[in-house]
Length: 431
Image (cartoon, rainbow, N blue to C red; front, side, top):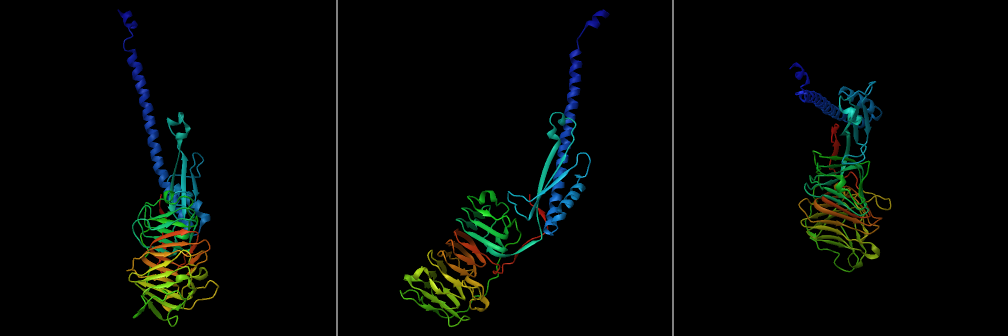
């Protein structure tokens, strides 16, 4: 009977299975510990990267670029990622991001990484013991006056195509739209400025800058700005009697006020009609309800004179500069194409066109290949289209409801529209 008990093998499988379950349980426990460790380290690394990016961005904003790496390393160490350890040291890599919504020298990307020893996972694949996280912060302390102010708050406000360039050198561009497609740049067009601030937080340059369009690397792009642009508009000139349009005949004419500081009002003004070569005297022009139109004129010139002029459009007045009109228009006190200084027009110096805020008529500036316009454009409720030839030059600030830039010309925006400044304050995480 005793011998039969020794020979009985019943229950042996149960013992083996119990041992297997124990080993499997220990393996799952080790796996759970590894995963928990990795998740915890990932959260710590993200915090370290966030803090390092903000610290480095702050140094860049303050002009202390040589100290940004040392400070980022110190901040990462405070968050549990020490770059000086003999075993499993952390690394903090700083770079200016070159893709995505936040590119350019105003941004600093910090990537914090560190080998993480594991209990179980490393026996299968050593790559599971290393992780890398990143965070991007905006460099603060920059400020630039606004020289292009687009006031509309919804939809697409800026559309650029062709091979033209919008330069805002030494100043910034502000778009009040909150739409995801607020600005589109395509077909070789280029936007260049000290800063580009946009209210929208959903605008994406990967989809809205296409087909050769670009924003220069030196332009600081700031999304989600809290304050919008609102240019201070000058007072409207006072007028009494308005005269009929002198440009409805086929003969050349000279028009304008008695002096550069005086005002004249027309119920429409057509320059260059029927091939005429017309002369505009210096002064203040009010266009009441009619059209301010520049046609091709004689020899490709719509006007022989336009030095020291200011145009105020009111009621339902609108501006059209036709495609072949090589106009030569210079605002009061501005530099003429030949290098001289135009006569002054008092409070309106530096402004070429001012369309009243109550006037919503579109404004179209095309112009021939050698058109020359110098002076700011105030049209806060108007949709402005600029389409110039390859050699055309337009200089001055812009305030408009929307802006469409086509053709091959160059628009040089200058800080003369009194629309305030776009200020990038303390560094903050943006991605």
